[in-house]
Image (tube, rainbow, N blue to C red):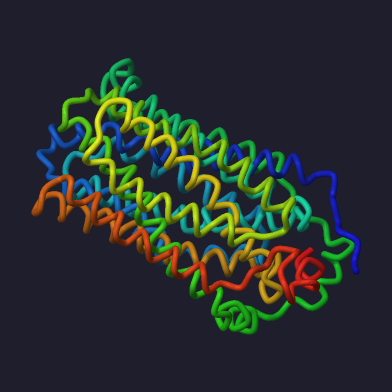
Length: 413
């Protein structure tokens, strides 16, 4: 059995990936939903138009996630993320110039294109630098970045709009912070050195088409693609439209932002607890599908609760979804047919489906809320939440205690 590589620079690289997730994938993206009530009032937008404009970001990533993942597999993580980060910074700031539904939609769409090269490759970075004994925890820590940034964006966006003047200035602030992260990455990030087991893997790296064929002939990849379509779509829909729903029920935009952000804070605990137990026990699936099932049930309770019961359900929901998500990424990385060298392609494909869901589900939920009542949209999310539960049950277990997985850890380090 090969000795697991533990390069010393893996923790600084994880810190950089965490900060990218915190500021760019989290804060810069999620400063938009809390100011949707302001935008809707200024531009006279419906729930359906808000859902479509929010989903346009995900649609932009659909066409480029696979391209971005393959590019990182072929030319290197640092180069691809350097281009993606400056693109995300520019388009994140340009959102502040939107004046109507069309310009808001286009700004979100072009911002999403940059994230097609960014999102899949954060997970690839973890796969390149960490082996199986630390993989779950490293994934959990990396995913904490976007979750924490999401929470800060949802919490601070509306108050910042009041302090800075209006929602446009909040978008400009987000763009400036993203530029700072781009500079950090260009100066400090490194490529993984081809030493030890990584050097052996590099000798057998398949060509472009062979690599794609190896990844996308695995049933697990397709099952996870469709699972992420629903999961990503539901997360985008509920976080995008819940603030406006709560304001319509009587909260201020600041109260709604605080309320929605609570799930992100509780998810941080889940992202630590779930991966820790998963690494210790050596199993992945048991820390995914039960938690997704709880998440589906809790989402359906949102329209019928108010006050402290609503806060409690929302906090518990955040914990369970936070505990589940890191294991999905670990499963992909531990598939012996994928491993770190093809992780970009795998996550690019999965991210494509996730972003299709991120566009389609908020749009459809917005139409349901407009046509059948706001509460009905949340019942719709609860119903479709059962689908990823069923799909994950058919995914091969990859944890080190799984039957038939004895060679997997060696193959992916």
